[in-house]
Image 1 (tube, each protein chain N blue to C red):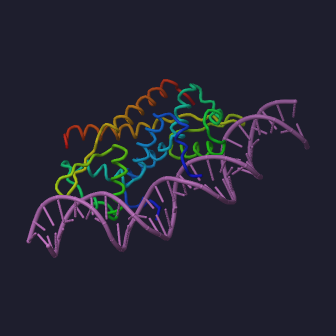
Image 2 (image 1 turned 135 degrees about the horizontal axis):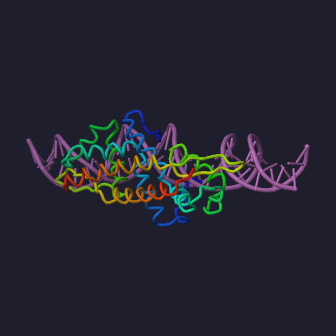
Image 3 (image 1 turned 60 degrees about the vertical axis):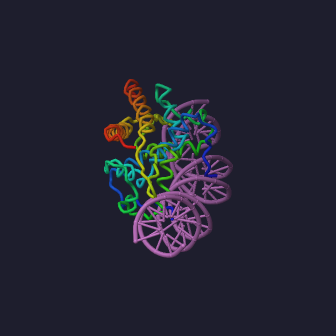
Length: 108
Length: 108
DNA sequence: AATCTTTATCGTAATATTGCAATATTAAAA
DNA sequence: TTTTAATATTGCAATATTACGATAAAGATT
């Protein structure tokens, strides 16, 4: 096994899981934080910032992009990556709902 | 390789990543939603709700518990699992900060 | 005590992820 | 056009995750 049974779950469950999964690695969290820190979105220096090789960073960027958490604009031979807040809002709203529901329940 | 280089990242980055990772599987999202739906936290029926075998569900519950997303109270021979909202709040606040910072930046 | 119920753990197979060296690609610069 | 710079892709090894059957553990029931 090892293959996730995605077809048994709802679209929303799969969506939430896939966004969360993309953030489920410290390198990808670090990339997000770096993009947030350098106000302009000039990238490529991410490789210098992180303790990871260029192909590894490129791979992580790809996953963040696939998850819709960042977007990349081609600018000459460089690529300008920056955060796309939409998916973060999806997660934030989802968690907000959970939190308010749980606090109302007053369970355990 | 395949081993995440956790020691190269900050504690916060590792914490965010590990909570997100725990939610990075649709089965675990489904478990959270089920715990939310059945107001009381009587559990064990999760196995009947999900298309997964009992050991698999037990494993997912363990990961959610390790991540601090749920807590389990022993009640006789059954166990009462329920959501612990604290970690959800950590993620929610973290995402809120990202969202407000990004919208101020007005990048790309 | 014997049995049932509920949950956890072990062992293992299938698959996915992580990381990087080597290489390819693409566009700017010389 | 050759070189340089930036990023992506390929291929592969190491490790992690997912799933489940078999079995164990622990309390309830008979």
